[in-house]
Amino acid sequence: MSALKVLRIGPAVTIQDMGRPGLLGQGVSQGGAADVRALAEGAALLAQPVTHAALEMAGMGGDFQATAPLRIALTGAVMSASIDGEPVSWNASHPLGVGQTLSIGAARRGVYGYLHLGGGINSPVLLGARAVHQSAGLGHAILAGDEIPVGPDSGSETGLVLAVTPRFDGGELRIVESFQSALFSQAIRDRFAGTVFQRGSRANRMGVELVSEGVGFSAEGQLNILSEVITPGDVQMTGDGKPFVLLRECQTTGGYPRIGTVLPCDLPRIAQAQPGASLRFNWVTLDEALAAEERFEKELKDLRRACQPLVRDPADIADLLAYQLVGGVISAKADPFEKES
Image (tube, rainbow, N blue to C red; front, side, top):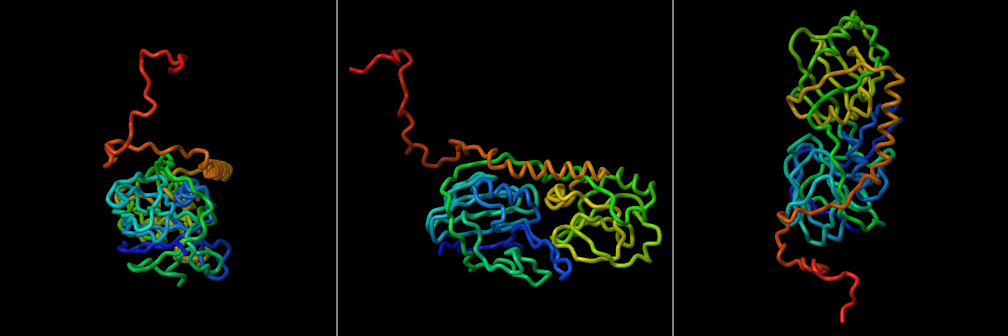
């Protein structure tokens, strides 16, 4: 079986796929990739189903060695990457030969980078998914010395690239009203939308803290709120009125008041925001939210058609002089329609 041997690894690298929807009743949140767009981009670059699992690297990658010929794709947070010391492009697909070493460094933009393998990661399926969900006791982080099993790969094409969709520098998060929005006065909701927040230092796959100047955003009677079902995208207010945006590995219930819910298609923007990045909220109607989600789903389906051939920069080709560069060159004076004698 093909595998990718882990030589060195960052502290928070896990196997992720689209997660486990529908298990809230059993106390398991959906989980899955923090940046679903990055998961879809890798699938498009390798022409394989978006349901295939990939490695999610939080802030730092590692060194990996192929035990068989592999196809790989690199998406998500932009990280430095090389194969046997030669730099390779991000948001692109590449071949990895037997014994070659892929090195992935720290994130230069964003938080979560993804390493996709042709055929996907063939790890055990737990409760319908391969996604590691450590807080639920499902799987564990990747360790040095692990061998990551790879599924059968029916494809062969590499050397494709996708334009990077801006989502690593903060920006606008669209938000809709939820069941508890009415607990916040209109003045509070307006001030919330008019505030520029910074991504705080407290963040993980469960949620992201947002900080701002001034007083917090309190709900009326928030000490009497009963614990209710919560979902990714919910914006909870802690006791001091500080917002936390919940992500895909959030808890299943909670008693903090929720001012609203961020659209699922905007969650990659908050998940990928680095500490200090500026974020603000924009209230939208339910119809506007549904239309935005429909556009997002269409974008993901069209990613395969958006892939372009990867053009290498000659400055990055170490053995450039070994290439035959003049084949097919013709004379500027010769008649192209005249037959050679």
